[in-house]
Image 1: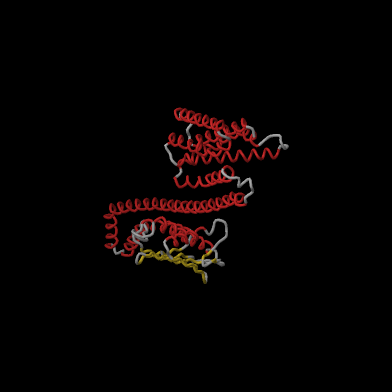
Image 2: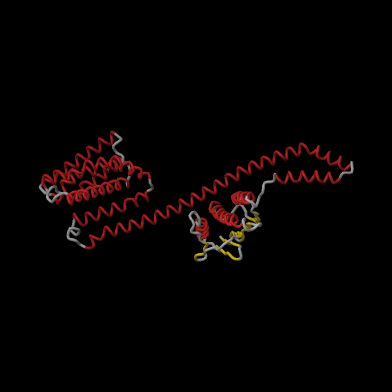
Length: 423
């Protein structure tokens, strides 16, 4: 590579990386910042060109991290007022340079030998790649600037390792070109670690997302049941007003029946009033409002489907378990019981869900029993259902029990499934 081509390659590469870094930092929309950036980069390019003349190409490459990258960081740090984000932007831009280099190698390998050199191919690729990244990639990268510092550091790990590897094996040493096994296998090793890291991160993120979706689902159930109870209370109040207003008339009618020797008619009339009052009563299962709403909602659903419900719940409003966790646990358990009872209704005339729940010594104890048909598959003591859309509820129950270091037990025998939980 001749001197002129080497200097041209170095200047083009510097402009390519600096422009991408500034774009990722969103410097260009501001006219003032744009002027400062152009002035600063012009000075850096002039210094770089001067070093080419007074020194050598190898010297410039070794001084490049200090001459360009460090100075560029200081400039972007001043323009953005951020500490970590300019580093990530510079490392990301450097990765884009690596991508340009590989594409240039691909072009050289595809054309006849000696037709074009890697350096020329990289220079020719610079403008189209720069336009593409500024158009498609840069807006996406800029959105990451609002992420937390921890997330930004995670994003910087892979480009930082790539940066260090490149300078350690290509610039300051020749380990990569000499075929050193450690150098050759390092990046595949890093890719493997990165893959498993992102795999674990995505699994945990998906788990949290699923938990949030379940919590939102049951919060909507609570909301609907709250609205239902509000209407029921309103109707009850209206009925009480009406009965108070009509009380004199009711008493007059009952007195007339008694005076006329019609006690049975008076009793029937009084019983009818009792039934009307009882029908308007809002069912309360325990003092805990959230749990009461869940129990009310599922009780109403079960009764509409012809499934009997027997609920015995003694729970205060102040418990150690968070209301969201308790609602998710309780809703999943009742949902599974309701699903099992639906399947038994064709064969059993009497399908019933029985729930017992109480607290003692700071612990909450829950038992839910319901009939079932067929066979229940267990793995490690946990019931499993491999059908699409099933099995998630049991996983959520186990996760919440484990979170509070509790104990859960699943048993199925003689057509009765029993879930016992202590948290």
